[in-house]
Every structure is written in structure tokens, then in C-alpha cells.
Length: 204
View 1 (cartoon, rainbow, N blue to C red):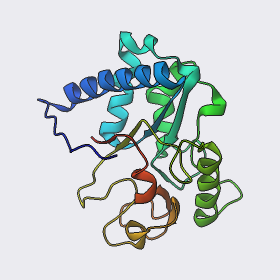
View 2 (cartoon, rainbow, N blue to C red; view 1 turned 90 degrees about the horizontal axis):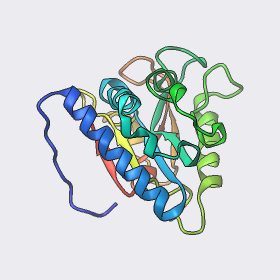
View 3 (cartoon, rainbow, N blue to C red; view 1 turned 45 degrees about the vertical axis):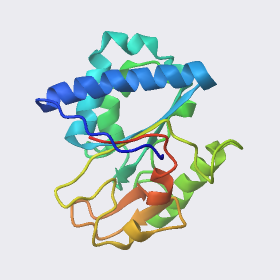
């Protein structure tokens, strides 16, 4: 990630979602043509889910080879599997359940009803990222083609809140979050070192 930032403004959120979905289709198709697969990090929230819904409705979505798409998450609310507030649950409803993905290439973050506490769950996800990283990647995460982020009212991205230590993490790629000022208080998030591994970062 080294290119100069670009600002794209749309008249409303619906047009933004449609334009971002069209651009994402192009990025995925180009990556698959160049390397055989594409890797995308999803975000939750109104804009992130709006983009996924727009992608689900786009006729051009059929240009994507869904079986050769790796999906990751930038952060997750540490809630039980299937909870409607989980980013993964919302992504399934908006898009994932309607396209022929390869389940082995879909990488949701661990849920709270599994065997792990947030910190251990973060370590598990970091290990999954490291396993997916290849010799052409820089460090223990894959080089994501596109990593999407929302921006909260307090300027937090992913679950990196300004007042919490996770935003200052420089070594680990995934951390558990406790005491988040926005419910729920327990979360899992990629850190800035992982975010910087992306070819492109989109703030929606």
C-alpha cells in the first residue's frame, strides 16, 4: 500500500455502494486473471453491508469466479455464532449466502461460543492468516487485494478505537479488544501492521 490517497465522492450512500461494488468486481476479476485468485477483507456497518448488497444485485457479479475468492474480516464483534450483530452474520445475509463461494476460502473470525477468549481467538486468527501467507507476501499475512474499513463517529476503524491500546500495536497482526466504548465491549480486530499489508485500503 503505497499509492497516494484518492477521494471519491458520491451523491448518496446508495450510489456509493453501487460504485464501490462495481469497482470491487473489477479488482477481483483483475486479480484472478493475474494470479488465479483474489483476496478481500470485508467490513461491517451500514456502508460495508450496503456494498455487499449492491454486489449481490449487480449483474456483473457473475464475472467473478467465486470459488477462487478468499474472504477475511477486518474485525468482529465477539458474540455467539449466528448472532445478528456479528459482521459475519450480516455479510452472509447481504451476499455470501447467494454466491457459490468455496467454504474453505471463507475465514470468519472466531465466535464467543467457541473454546477461546478474545485474546486466544485473536491468536487463532493470526495463525490462520500466517498459514495463508505465501513466499511472495511480506510478513505473516496475505497481501490482500482490497481491505475495506468503515469509520466510526469517534474515528475508529476496524475495532481500533483511539483510546485503546490496540491502535498502537506494532507487532501482532490480530488482537483481542476489551472495554470497547461501542457495544459490544469485546471484539477481535486486525491491527495496523495487517492493514498495511493490503494493496488497497478503502474507507467507506
